[in-house]
Length: 108
Length: 118
Picture 1: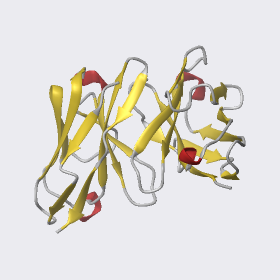
Picture 2: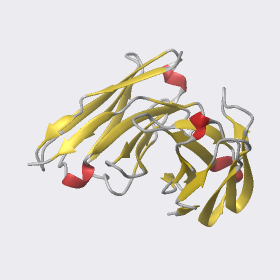
Picture 3: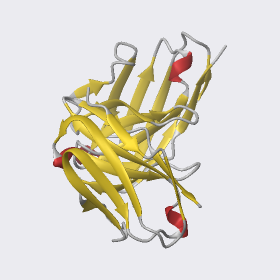
């Protein structure tokens, strides 16, 4: 099973700042099979990025994804108040789906 | 718009059974892959089970294999999860999710809470 490790665990930033979230896989992941989600308290997760870099429908262009192999990144160019949330990466491989443990982006 | 509504959660004793349902609307259900994902209180996300659009391909996480059964009824636009031999560690919010591509989870329901406790 591929293990995804996200860092940092918590990111303390101010609105308007740039957020860079990392997701590292224990073995190589096809870029086509890497996604990112946002989850706010009491809500279901929301798909942000699929295929490592494609934005889902309705996702603002301040969200971008990049990476390949074992290292992937979610970048939020300028944090808006509604962006403070927990973010998860997710991969598919060998008939199994796994998530990272999450990165919390909190207001500094 | 796409809507997924889970139901069937509740309090059950260890060793008991529960059947979750997910009612889908706003899209052609029979074209979409469906999954169940759970989240224990204060924890991260864990994929539980997957079923292909036709129902011909099914996968389970090792943690639930042999105890949980996923199924779908395309005529009723519904997804199900039969959960048997429930354990305390199965306590979680259970989400159903749909996607036109099998590799990620495009739309999510609001979740239903399952609590396994004596």
